[in-house]
Length: 177
Image (cartoon, rainbow, N blue to C red; front, side):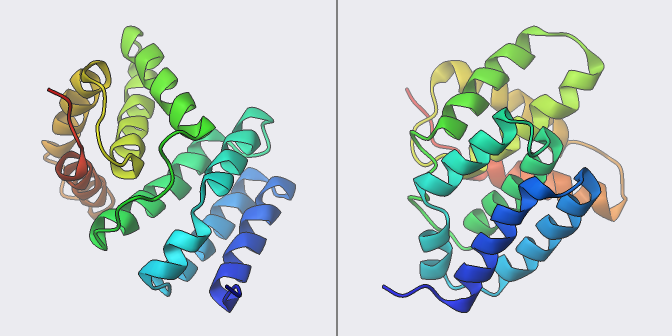
């Protein structure tokens, strides 16, 4: 199957992220979000392969992409996935899946205020990207985090978008009995 223009553009933007400053990365991620909105479901699935999630993981580990920027990108991906009701996105079993699960468990044991926002963001990404069952241990961390975020009373548009993402994450989360 031949790559479409959108697929090529998206992959080019992703590969260019490591050569950018953090601010330039944010601009490219916004550009990637716009390209993502132009995709159909098949194009979306063809871009977000295990390979892409593993590349994002490597970029994080090698400090070529900040965790904040990775989360911003992955929230866009998860949001799109949830809105379009796309299943089987290839996130499961990737190194990024493993890293996020490990970070959620680690951050949940810390009681620092600065970790709370990161924990909530990790839970949002994890819940939106994960297909199928989430372990009871991770579920017991993510559900309260996402509920707490969803109950925010702030009326700013940015905050309301975060609440919407939290609710989508909750609605899309598989569980284990």
